Image (tube, rainbow, N blue to C red; front, side):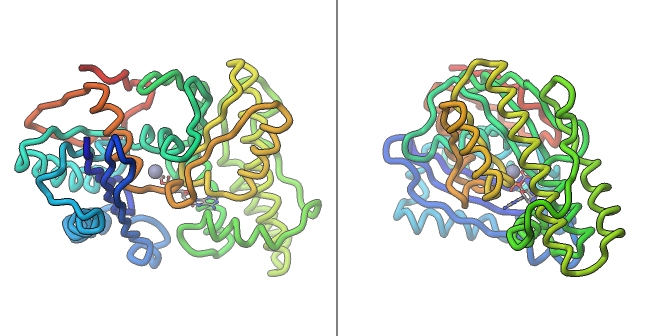
Length: 339
Ligand code: KG4
Ligand code: ZN
């Protein structure tokens, strides 16, 4: 089954074609970073308008890249939520219209399920069950995963998401948008032991996170040490605190569930320090960690095509002729595919 995937939940337009027998045939991404950069964050209306401009050309490019005609598409999967409502509606409208024109099914996919399943696109994918750490710009969650749509939320951030903490702290430091990768690059020039940030909520049991205090801690540290040469060391200590906190919670989640496999996905899973720390955790515990390839850590169409294909191949059907977007959509409300 060939599934066209469309991602438009935030500030990237992603399109991909996934074949359930032959794997990923083609994918393309358009980033809106240049549009939002001057505002220091995503402007929702500008995001929607750019998806309108870029989606159809990207679909054409992906079909050309795969050497596949439009009528060879067997189904369309699009991101239904969570995300920005206007941006989601663009993908839903285009996806559903295209599917209706072609006479094929269309399926709304959960964005975080897309992230969660992205590591399964790689060679040697993890078997179920596993623990997933989902770390994106909008979510930080630990989930027990027993199969597609069988998700038990173990813990989540009570305030800022991990990516959001990176972005806000980067902004305080005068770095560009999106701040995560820039802060990580600055931290790579910093040294250990110069500053120490707290590891929030690690001194009590539980698997929830809280990252907003780290941003405030960064602000006071920066005010106390305004010299430019201190910035890299402060960035290092901030990143170390986020990474160490996540490693502590991942170890707890693995101990609590008795599982050995850990999947890490979402934009922050591209972070090198986080990967090194979690790889070490796996070595210490005798388990294994799985990540998406770097380009599929952040938003992309491939994860949506893939998640849609897994559900459609399992027999899930949604023939509704109306469509909507779900800006808020908790992942543990998902169910296994139904035939
Ligand atoms: O998954 P994603 O592309 O979008 C959402 O679903 O939110 O995640 C984007 C987030 C941003 O906050 C970005 O700063 C962060 O992921 N990010 C990083 C890195 N690359 C992306 N954070 C830290 N280190 C990175 N290397
Ligand atoms: Zn995302």
